[in-house]
Amino acid sequence: MRLALVALLVPDYDPAIAFFTAIGFHLVADEDQGRKRWVVVEAPSGGRLLLARAVGDQRASIGRQAGGRVGFFLETDDFARDSARIEAAGGTFQEAPRDEAYGRVAVWHDPWGNAWDLIAPASQTIALDRPPP
Image 1 (cartoon, rainbow, N blue to C red):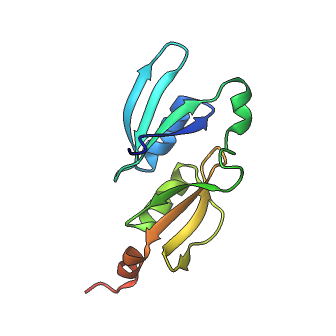
Image 2: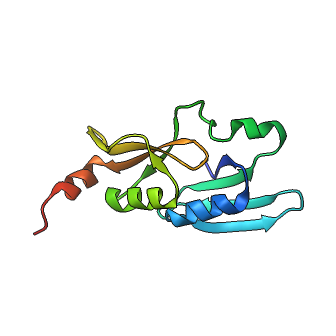
Image 3: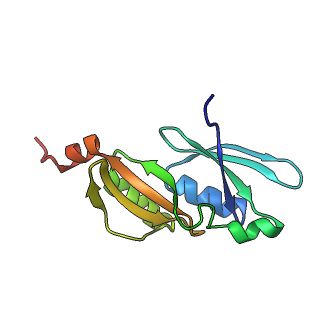
């Protein structure tokens, strides 16, 4: 087995597509199914989100899918590039980047309030800290 998709509740499809494509995701599906759309975005190195427009009582869960905890984790090979993309697209960082044993990390929130980690794994953090040859 493999995990194929994770659903992310959003208020509407088009702003969510705009945000995720601005930070580097690719739109892989946008199919009209009548009452809803099947919208899937994929991170550049893999991992897919189903952007699900919340309806009715689901709206109360927008931005709180993980109960206020970090619920989504993006790995990067270029922390500066991707943090700049996230901010330019409307994401907000909760903290300055910090170095942990596993790599450089910072918590950020998407435009709907969900908490994410942006992580440059330790092997890449070391490479980022090396002066150019």
